[in-house]
Length: 309
Image 1: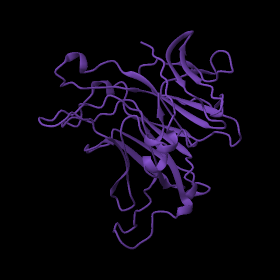
Image 2: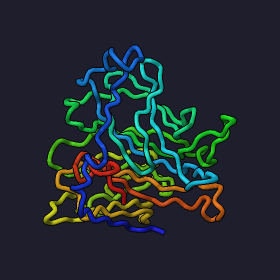
Image 3: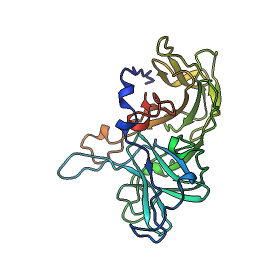
């Protein structure tokens, strides 16, 4: 059932980055692999600020004999120059984090559940260094989408059969927003529940869909939207349309901040709990969500790295 979600940003100012945790500089590797001496992997002038978001679903629930049921974090990892595995970030589903990595060199990133021995997805990327690394201005967002599971002990069988059709993957979103005063939005379709392709309405001042034929696991172009001041807020609808039928609908309320650049990631919260005593709760239908982030303090510099609708 389609549901419109609303959120009131009544206290976001107190949930700024100091609450969420500061961006992590993982540029700490020493060329000789030691803990002391040597130089960082790259100078501060070559650091690139990256946002990671965990939008993958279907992680198997772990049910120990004693203790609560849990799901494992999704770790982004890489090999350092000393050939040691480094955890770039460890993500809870539906949350984002910001790190700094070395630019101007090819990096190989892997994604695996905590405790897994092998990556379920890999990517290579060369990042452009920040103009000012101290500003912590995100130049690239990387979305983890699909199904986040691991392989069974045989190294072949996936924990969640759904990962065969929708394997874990990286979606790279370079920052292509303008630097002007225009309020803008960009959409990532990472939902398995919402059909593909879909049209998307993102601007209350225009009639009909603003983004056409957005495919699953793809990124839209940047689109103008309505930004308002807190003294005269106007909500912004984000509606995913198949033809004229709304398949998922959200409301950014009370407003998009004036001049904000918002990245809206459409994903699902999805439970896979094959050992649950109630069969109806072992693999219930996913719930569509919208995660809104960006460099505006009210969007990205909050606990969890963004706001979920």
